[in-house]
Length: 167
Image (cartoon, rainbow, N blue to C red; front, side, top):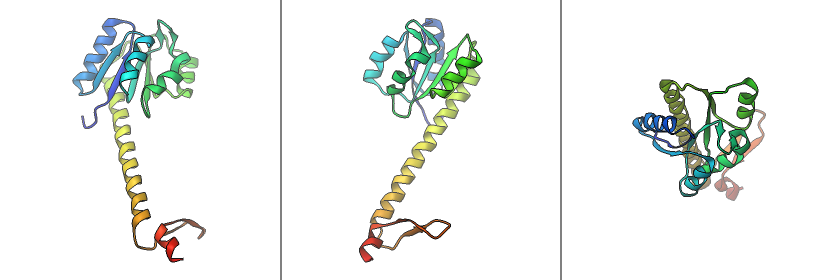
């Protein structure tokens, strides 16, 4: 695996939590488990995560009621909701609230692995794109050459500071 993720698993069933932690740890991810939202809050105050895998039904209530809070557990955080009680309405609600994926129990390890791999790849590509964007901006701002960008209608979209100095 090229890109490992820091993953937080919020699952009140200890056996399921341990299995998920083991499966994803074997793939090279840094995995931390929490039995409740309260425990996940304490953990998230110390660590930042790239992915949260959470049971839909937790001791504190349904995860949909806490998604805004959970999204603060990391920058550009992805969330996977796992449930034994899947219905179309709750799935659509979760996806509208920004959940990356919705998995029905029993969890098939290979399916979960492929979902996590897809998310890790997406994060890697986003990181590379951000680096390229920063490099291009730095190049535009420091190059001692005239850089003028036009749209298809010939309107000026962007120019660099050097061009501005000359004109």
